[in-house]
Amino acid sequence: MKWSLQLGRIAGIRIYVHATFALLVVWLGARTLAEGAGPAAFARDLTFVLLLFGCVVLHELGHALTARRFGIATRDITLLPIGGVARLEKMPERAWQELLVALAGPAVNLVIAVVLVLASVAAGRGMPAVPSDPWQAPLLERLAWVNVMLLVFNLVPAFPMDGGRALRALLAMRVSNLRATRVAAGLGQLIAFGFGLLGLLGNPFLILIALFVWIGAAAELAMVEVKTALASIAVEAAMLTRFDAVAPQEPLERAIQLTLEGSQKDFPVLERGELRGVLSQERLVAGVARGGAGLVVADVMEPAPPAAHPRDPLAPALERLQDGSVRMVPVVEAGELRGILTADNVFELLRFQSALDAWTRSNRGSSTRATNSTNRKEDTRCRLATG
Image (cartoon, one colour):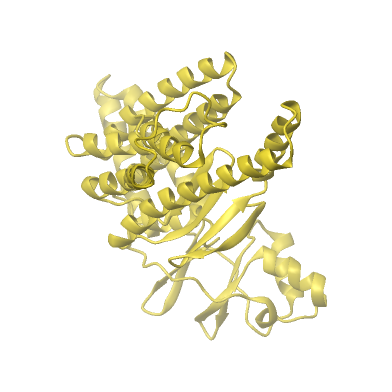
């Protein structure tokens, strides 16, 4: 995530803090000044916030390490003023696995709360009471009850929050994943609307949560719809077969010329027909800025990403393109580069598929001529799906 500073690694997972986290520190300082408190009060409140976000990191690690049990890696965890985000490489394919991953984070908060309560009892303070003023309560009590609040709040069935993901997983055990996602996303956006209304009554934090839930639900639903649409389509249906390539020893001037003459931005690097790497537009611009157009492609190219086969399913390749790990997927068969795949190609295919589907729906059953047209449309879709 942009504007983030890496704090370190835990269990091999990079932990980042977003630059906007500084706004929380500024808010704490402003609150201290407004109440006329001194540096000691600010240090106490800052310590509480840092410990709270330590609990948030443990919450996200609960998701990440449970996903790891199912062979799913986590790219990183980023701390934001409104909480934390763990970026998994993908969501589990099986509903029961997604349910466990979703519930693992709140389960961590439950364990933390129980440990803090037991620590309070062992220290002779008894069962922590619900603090009337969380900012003035003893640190142990505050942390215990905040973890209870995190547990309850994250179980609200507002997709894509943990409770919403758990709901989607439970629904997916009965209906299709697409149907389950539509129901969970719709409920999530309804709850987000309620959060927004409450936020307008005086809690801006709820407005931020509402925006996160609303936008996140829409984005996740769109992703599932695309994945469902691509489920039966092969890579060769969307790959670009007319493309330019460059050789390792060609000057960058050649790649600049190809870029200006056409719309292609990233180029496969071929040597005697064998894929050696990829020259992205970012590497090309950086190379020209560093050494001029006289540098050769081999000086700035990057290793080729894992290739796809023409008959591989299209959805996993699109996931790689969307997560930012690659800009282009080479399509190789029998050691020969058959084509290249970009996100633009895939979405162009989806636009045509959508247009054909809309045309079919508008003409279905109207006449024999419409039926024949539908058959021609199905032939077209077949050609799209088989390349």
